Image (cartoon, rainbow, N blue to C red; front, side, top):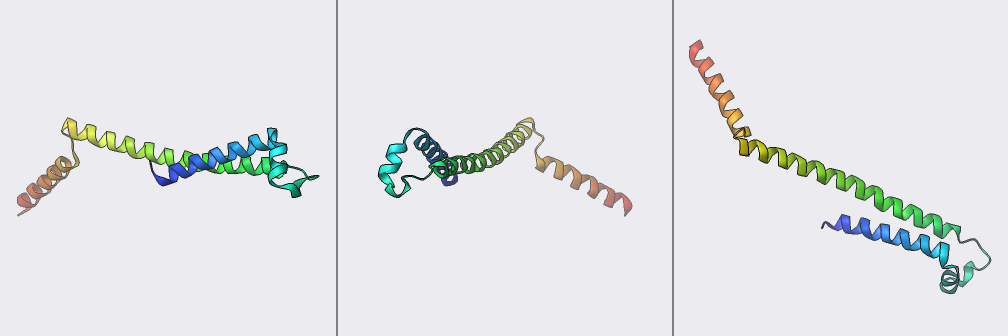
Length: 105
């Protein structure tokens, strides 16, 4: 896997963990950060959602690009397998232009 895909999975996991901690782990958060006692833990919840969304959006665009590249390769391979490769089209166009030049002379 590419490094960026791994980073997106890590971001999504971190966001999920932050959301779970803010919902069910008040005591854990207060033990790790004692200065938060008496304050709201909502910023941890919202930061977890934001981190997860960043990872999900980046993964979506990377996956979309990879699918388009894979589809393009499959189409090129099917054209080559069918004998309709790009080199055949170029050579037939070159032959047609050469024959036109010869007929004009």
